[in-house]
Amino acid sequence: MARFDDLIDEALTRVREIMPWDLSRALAAGGKPLLLDVREPAEFELLHIPGSINVPRGVLEQSCEWDYDETVPELAGGRDQEIVVICRSGKRSVLAADMLLKMGFANVVSLKTGVRGWSDYEQPMTNASGEHLDADDGDVLLAPRLRPHQRKPK
Image (cartoon, rainbow, N blue to C red; front, side, top):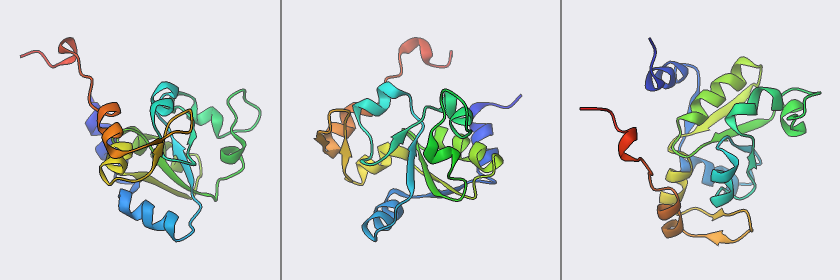
């Protein structure tokens, strides 16, 4: 039986990752990758990388195809587009990037460490209202919220 981390490790045999500073440099140099945030809408609204679009992991495959309620034209028509997949910590984005590769997207990478790493690197973030958020905001909003009943039994 494969566990979550096993699935990540297996996908990493196919998915290339970039670090926050790599993305920051690429954007500063005028790069225009599609920044695809696969977190849930409530997570995205709290904070995200400016210019990113939100396509939750649960509807990703349909968002990449024409003629679905979830179709996102930038994805459906962008199989050759440079795409950076983003999540909170860099794990869901690896699985999403792997799926995009399987669906024929040619130029896909995952942001290692996700928006947490982006925040730690003190890069720009915004919320749904368009307000600029700093790294301290990111620390609070991205802190783990693991509840006692979610911990592995001893």
